[in-house]
Length: 454
Image (cartoon, rainbow, N blue to C red; front, side, top):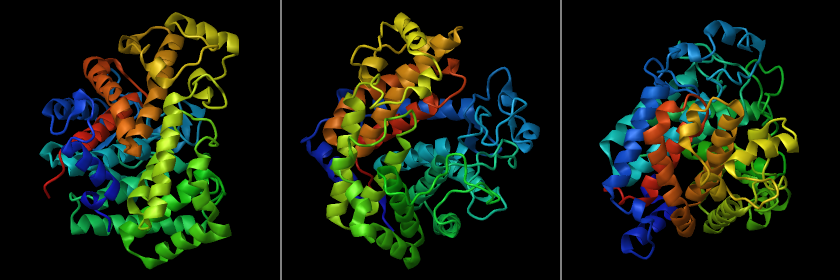
């Protein structure tokens, strides 16, 4: 079992900070309660706005607004595999479509922040989210299936899951198991739950299937593919499972798939692959959590270093590349089916042009949280999806890389994001941005705090 206070890369970074050899931004120095307290308040705001006491989970849509729980698809629509009366088997737009992903990344970050600080409030938050993830683990009658949901009724969910839901669930449960927060009973539950997921994936030859096994999930695909994402997914999954369960079967599979075809997967997880990944998307930060699991569990220092160097180089690419270059960033996530002319018209009011070389930092500097209340759907989409959402991807990668220089670079923007959400977040009604601001704040706390004393 790998425990966080024994993770070499995180320990090394913390030691550098404490020794003064590496300085974080002045907004996030070691032991600075002024940085921890706003993040804790933002966590509280997030749970109060998007969480539900019945499931202990947070949702994609705000639940404390005028519509309350009706902001989500109804259990009746979920049962029909619909959203707003239209067929949607994977629940996009329902508000429960990303429950394991968003809560999983939340729990992962909470554990990092707690193990670095020992803060009691963070401990209570992590235990709460873990209770919600236990429901995710048990709501389906199909062993090892990770659903999209559940709804706050505690039983309704969409049966067409995805790579991101499944991997985020596994990674979060592994991270809680590796934390000093976990009891022996918690670790036994996690071991059993992750073994069930792993057995289901093995049975299906590492193709993620819908609940009844009749076909591949909408965003499931085969995890054995020889691509960077395939290697990160398969090896990251097996690394988490073997570490949390201690079962040599999963360790043997991890080794076998790592050796396959002259260790092609480890070759893919090298710096040489950093600039050959498919274009970045609004969701490509999810693959970095798989890499983080690999970096933190791999016992071979050379392999751990290999993954760390890939993370650093790929995070630099995300921070520095031109967001409007389709070779580097997918436009679909924020522009949808707009033509170039429509896209340029939408960018114009923000002083942006498709012809300019524009980084995520350039975008974030145009972000205006007051436009969470914008009346124009187009203005709202550009501001929320492009100007805030896309930068969260690169900032998340920078923090997960744990590279001191990248953390210094990302830190001021993460602090600003937390502050802006504290001031204007009550106007944010749906999407991933509130969740991501919380996660980024927690990771910055973890990297800037004094080491845990236990």
